[in-house]
View (cartoon, rainbow, N blue to C red):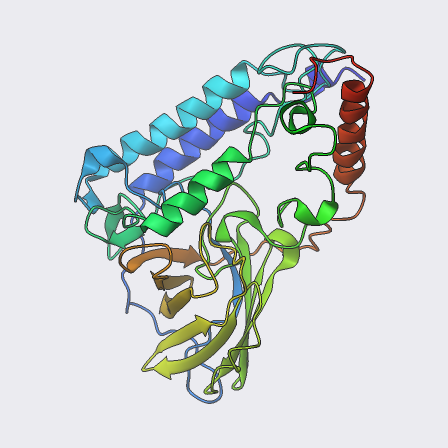
Length: 368
């Protein structure tokens, strides 16, 4: 079958999305309070349902906006149009049928043989930015006023620099042996030293939270609510948070990647307080002393308002806060079978052994 003749191109799909997006920007949402929200038998707002949290609004505000939290209609439409035009441009330069690259190549971007990463066909950041109280936002972060995370502490800067030093350009050589000697440890010695997301243990970008942030794809969330517990399932890596209602936090010795979440109601808002993280929370750079407070409020029958405040004195010089909306979705949350047929470790670890043998056989520059 000639797939090129029968399948629509990515450019055509994105162009269609651009038309739909323009219509979406022009449509005003229903104002909060125009319809009665659903409630549980106990009278609490019913938060249960599936939500698509994808949004084009960035976590941090672009610097050109300064302290400007809100966008005009024209600015918002221009940003959405630019985003989709970038998608069209990227996809127009790629093969819409996703054929494998030819053999060979030096691994550089665009070179023959470079397998590359995801192109925009696989990315689902949403079709529009979000607005709250009828106002388009420049960022998810609302405090500090510049919409950007506070400055890092000196210790956090040092940890971040050490982490960056562990990443090297893939030159096709076992650089760790070339620089450190034949017995030097390397970044591919053991699967347990690979990143948690790569090992399918935790979603990247704090998509499972807390705080629960939008990422490149798989942004569905499902909430199941009872009087004693609230379960929040993240589509990415099937991270499931269990919020225990009206309880004390677990003892400090009990810690986990997602922390210990305890909830209570303040009027019609569910407040979730999370502590007891282990040494590697999902939030980038965060430590075991991370403390997150989240607020979930149903603002109409189809939308939740999600607010959060992050505090970690080991990382940021001040707390920071943000908010965005969770629109309801009728899309099913399917099993995220990340580790089934995950051949990456065989390739990563096995490939590293081949590169190391090349060094020992003298096929690459001499070991220092």
